[in-house]
Each structure stands twice: as C-alpha cells, then as structure tokens.
Image 1 (cartoon, rainbow, N blue to C red):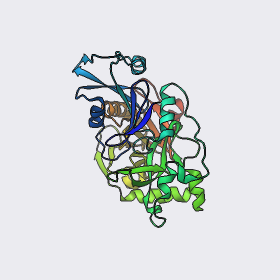
Image 2 (image 1 turned 90 degrees about the vertical axis):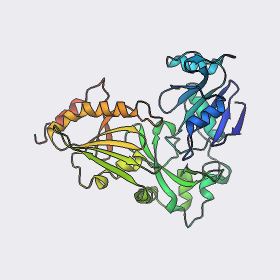
Image 3 (image 1 turned 120 degrees about the vertical axis):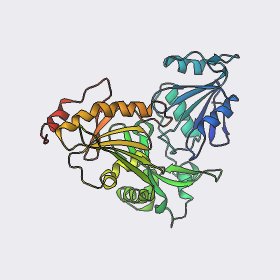
Length: 343
C-alpha cells in the first residue's frame, strides 16, 4: 500500500499496484460519480467480485478497452470473474459491512487488501486507549446524553466483522450490527460507526439493552409496506426502508410492520439492502410461492449496487433458514413442516 488519501466523498486507499479502494459509507454518496472522478472518465465498466465488492475501470468508449499501461492486479481480479484485462487505474468499491458501517481507516484498508488477495481478515489489535483508533474515537466523541438516541442497526455480513462487534444474528452470514450515527469528517454526511464490545463495556450497559434501544430508535425510520394479493398463495408484501437500517430492522420488526403474528414464519427474499419481499407462511399451498419469489428476488437485485443475493429464506423464530436459489430445492425438513399446515 502506498498512501491514504481523502476523496471528495470518502477515504480512498491508493495501492502500489494501481488499485484504489473506496467505501460507500457516506449516506447520499454518488458512488458512480465518485468512481468516474477517480478514474478520470465518464466511460466506466464494473465487474462484481462476489460478496459486496465491485471492480471498476475506465474505457476509452462504450465497450472499447482503455489504451495505456496494463494493470496486473486489477486484471487478475477481473480474470477471476470472466472479465477482460484492465489497463490504467482501477477502483474497488465495497460497503465493507453492508452500507455505511466502517470508515476506511488504515486498519480497514489492510483488511480489504488482505481480502482481495485471498487472505482472511486480520485481527485488529485492541488498543487500550480507545480514543486512538476508529470507530471508538468517533463514538466516544458523541455527547453522553445523546449517545443512546443515536444507536441504530445496519445490515452486515458476519465474515466482514471482527470478534468484538455487537449484533443480532439472522443466519451464518447476515447480521444486524449495532452502530452509532455521527457526522463524517466533512460534516456533510451522517456515517455509521460500529459500537464495539470493549467500548460498550465501559458504559456499564448490557449489550442486549443497547440492541433494544437501537431497535426502538429505528421506529423513527420510515418503512413503506405494499401488499399484493395473490391467487395461489398468501399475499406478497414489499417492504422498503428509507433510513440507514435497511433489512436489519425490517426483519426484527416484521410482525409489527405487517400488523399481525407470524407463528409459522414467512418466506423472505432480500434482493437489496433496503428492500425485503415477504409471503407469510400460513397454508401448505404457500410453498408454491417459493419459485416466483426466487425469480422476483433475482430480477430486482440483478443490477442493484446494494444487491444482497438471490436466495429465498424461511424466516422462522428470528432465523433465516435458506431455501435455496433458482438452482436449488428447499430441504426436506422444510416440506415436513409445511405438511403440518392446513391446505
């Protein structure tokens, strides 16, 4: 790594091999515009690297590779995902722990570089003086009287977190991470800073109480609920969040948002970070909703920058049980449960 610089909307890491890393962690950030600015071209091409990372590079025109020096590091990443070689600088963007979680400080940059090179996330050393590292530095700067009112939950992937995060776990991959909202370094945008366990322990408040306060705070975030009646199964609901919490609080508040108990759980798809599609699991025939729900999730998330995945889940007792993608079939255990429901 060569240096850390500051872009117009977020921190940017410039590596020695000509690959930039930029977070999408500022609310209201124009990611495509920021990438185009970094690459110095309005003609840009993107390649999904899997998970939550995207590789961007410039072209001389639509479909015309850029002339100039080859970029071996970016080309290697592109080749792994079936894209042509890259010339000139490239950008890798990632929401880190799913949209507005981490500032890209030196430790986060090191973690991302390690991830891009196929390594695991390095263990961040615990500094006894929390004021010296992010995100504790920013969280500690918040007025004590306002601190709990600024707590929120945001979507995250468990694989992106260290061992000190505080979260509600949905399955082996997805969690709702506890953060505190605070202005970023520019003062123009709100940014979410993780509340780490060793910091929360200083406050003397149980982690579960902090999570409960964060859930209560999300009730101020607007969630639109649209119902679509279906002839062959229970209604389809589309829930969209207008705040920072995305599917994290939609799932935790699902019964509240739909206005009733869901004793058998629901069929759930999460095409985008701020959108959840739901079919309440009421009758045996609701199994027929799985395939159209899979198609819907795939189509909605296909071109979305905040795409989560193609899978459909059985959300039951707070856990997202995977039912598979279009290429999979649900497990036998799920059908055994469905057989016990009325027709």
